[in-house]
Image 1 (tube, rainbow, N blue to C red):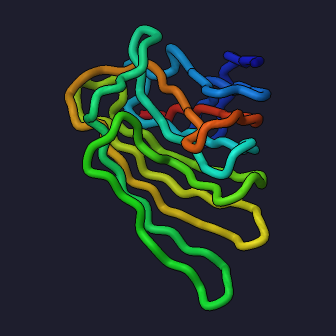
Image 2: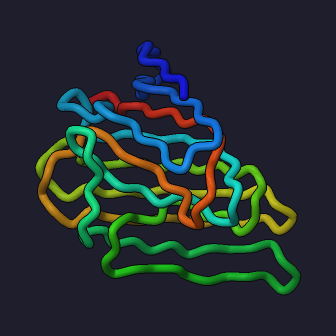
Length: 174
């Protein structure tokens, strides 16, 4: 993995970290959330070796939160014959689903994270698009239902396997 901690500014966003990863079973980004920002944007392009997207776990001091405090919901649409619409959700899990790929094609997701460093619930809002034969798009909402502070996160391919791609993390200017 390579990391770039150079700070670049564009509009209201400040680039905090870009990480490129190859054949990883998980990708952890440490020390990216701080008191400098309340809200963050993650943009990731990836290719997984197994059908499935990413789950996310928040982390503090290099340790993932794995208790059942995550809740998420994800309506999705597919461009298959006759359409395809559905909703995936969980009331309590050890990670939040933030992207979905039904195949092993390249996919992209964007997620806004609110309050990860503050001692408030951490919220995720995002969208995902997968570039396979039948285009799939999802919206994602998730929450870490506690009032703890986090300084990073881990992405996990939710169907196992490994992933290759690039992730960038931006802070929203206050």
